View 1 (cartoon, helix red, strand yellow):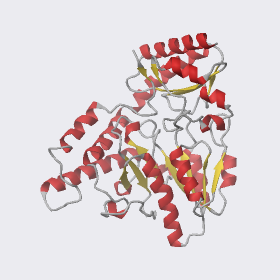
View 2 (spheres, rainbow, N blue to C red; view 1 turned 90 degrees about the vertical axis):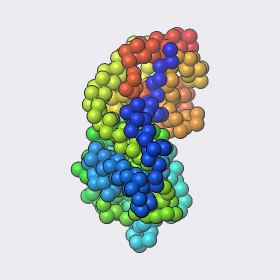
View 3 (cartoon, rainbow, N blue to C red; view 1 turned 135 degrees about the vertical axis):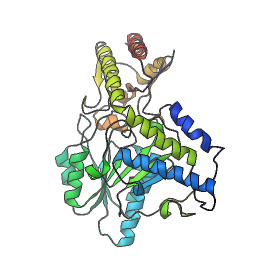
Length: 377
């Protein structure tokens, strides 16, 4: 038995989502941009239904939903699109602010923009993984154009205080971008109510298909397109829309919202059982604050063992990781920001529970880690 406990990297596609997408692969294959005949109009209507589904669940208006290939593209569109639009409008604000613990899909576009006339300030996080609001407030000077903050960290699962952060941004006239790749479908989000200007998400993080995501943009916000071609999506993102994936994205978010509370309660209980079992081994440290945290996340450091050997033993029975799936084996910059050494980061385990996680898998995880620790220590 191999227990899949890496749901932060990706989730299995919900069978109901697969069924919803099925007709749009072949039976209804028309291009939604062509409005000259009925099949194309039906495809366009399916796209608009999905757009409305995302907007309703996330508390925004359907007109603000731009479909992308995933959260990485959505992040790039948000950050680069805002900067280029501000430049064209003669906006004198240039500075961009974010946290040191953000995903590379935010940090790398910021680094790119930093090389092109938009200086970047990265605010440190506290040992619990959360930002100090006083430090963040101090970073939001009069020259700041945009702040980008991850709602839920992809490695340690901590939830940043979005309401308080949004209030600071409004007070200072700073745009707020939220990377919600790990949050959408897992915690309640209300974009308009919170005052979020841009929000990115990716379908495969909440039981939808890979290759589809979205950027939700506050109405009236100027955004420069990053893909040019056919002028689709009101000229904000060119390219023929993949109707099956769009339909699947909407269905997946509806399904995730429908069982969100029940799933969080059940997985939170399993996560706590896992933590108790691992803590009893001794020399196991929790990474990130226990709350507020995603209910399905647990990240621990195993003291006194070699990380490479640890994960070599674990992978025989567990699908887990030591950090982001996008890190390509590099030490976690998130754990480094918490004060962990390279050796400690390598000997860390990220558990991401999901809909299919069971008591049997939790028992297996505890037994497998315990056996590995005994052998390595």
